[in-house]
Amino acid sequence: MLWSGWGDPAKAVTLPEPVVRLLRDALGVREPAHGPAAFEEVRLPVPALPQPVLAELEAVTGAKRVRTDDDARIRHTRGKSTPDLLLMRAGDASDAPDAVVLPGSHEQVLDVLRVCAAHRVAVVPFGGGTSVVGGLVASRTGFAGVVALDVRLLNRLVAVDAESMTAELQPGLRAPQAERLLAAHGLTLGHFPQSYEYATLGGFAAARSSGQASAGYGRFDDMVMGLTVATPSGTLSLGRAPKSAAGPDLRQLVLGSEGAFGVITSLRLRVRPVPGARAYEGWRFGSFAAGMAALRRLVQDDGPSPTVLRLSDETETMIGLARPDEIGAAGGSGCLVVAGYEGTEGHVARAREHAAAVLAEAGGEHLGPEPGEGWAKGRFGAPYLRDALLSHGATVETLETAGFWSDLPRLYEAVRGALTAALSDRTTPLVMCHVSHVYPTGASLYFTVATAQSGDPVAQWETAKRAANEAILRAGGTISHHHGVGRDHREAYAEEIGELGVEILRAVKRRLDPAGILNPGVLIP
Image (cartoon, rainbow, N blue to C red):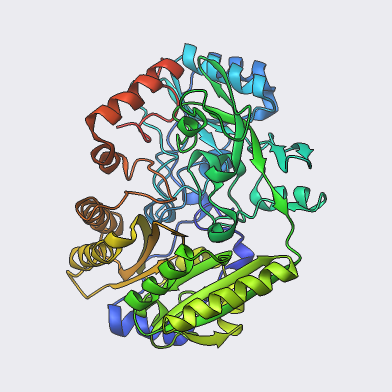
């Protein structure tokens, strides 16, 4: 992973000249006066961790698995939100951990937590480093230091239960690694978020991830049948059966806990057969409202649903953001729907036929396979596009929410209006949106914003983000559908769940993590 951007540096993209002209003429974007800092120019704080604590950690994992070198510290600094990248590109690594610890077993994780609790050292559980909500920045106040607990060595497929269609996997597996291991058994998770190439299974669980194929495979939390968690107070083993009436489901307490309650060390996940057939296609609707009505009819109908179902609004369709590898050249009028189907040949044929009947009756125009196949080809490319836009002087960021179908029109207008107002001090920003996760009762809204960078682009986005958060809460949406809470949504989350909800979280935190060392400042208001 590129330390100051996204992914593989060899896959960096170059903006086409028409896009550069659009940025300049429509948004007032100007090239930054200075390029991003070089690696050797990054400013790191002096490590604060006392040497005796380092020695105790080395006794747990071995000296080679406790790293304090600049490379390790820089690569474990923050996540991959736009503010995170802007700070790193400016050479600011002030949030770097003092050390990176790489335990190789559940028992070693427990021992690392024991050492850190005894010495009041904050611990940031670290998987792929793809958080976009400030989920990897621990508060240092009251702590002797900060360590990143990297789970990359917990990277095995432990067992496959083909009869129950479950698999036990460790949390440090990156999603492509997990898919390769499962494919050898003819199986898949079917979980493909935009962060797929670098995110880990543990991160998916800790943040309640939702993949691009959630219409067919479900969210990641739907896949979790059981898990094991290392906490400063001991081991939590959950999930004896797919469903249970034995009290509240404590699995749900861990899912979405973002490392604040414990470190996930094992996951029992539902798996599916590798699909024998895949097909993608595009549809066009005259308006975002018409497209949303069509998607609602499709998912509320009794027939088979598509595996992928997403709808771009007019602006996103015009820009062609559904195909980031061809940005600026793949747009059009109206609103684009991408539908994808996976499964057996028979299932794919039935699902396509059913979707075609519903979408056509709702006023959709069939565009054939090309728009859908183009989306599938470039589905993981948008973060690379963001890096290129930042280099040209644009502030580009995303945020998301979800609501019930009856609330979505109001939620859409509220968030779009708040972002436009907050970022219109120089020129009108480009605010785009798509629906990408649909349910019989509602859907998510995913916004992408582009505007000219101000003199302080981090503060610029923080102002816009606060305005969007307030708009989401006023309009009745949830503060996050799949990005999580982190630090960025913590205060809005408190308002969403109320004072009593906050007290419940704090009580759980006190019981599992009495010293408060796990990801302090993240999630818990």
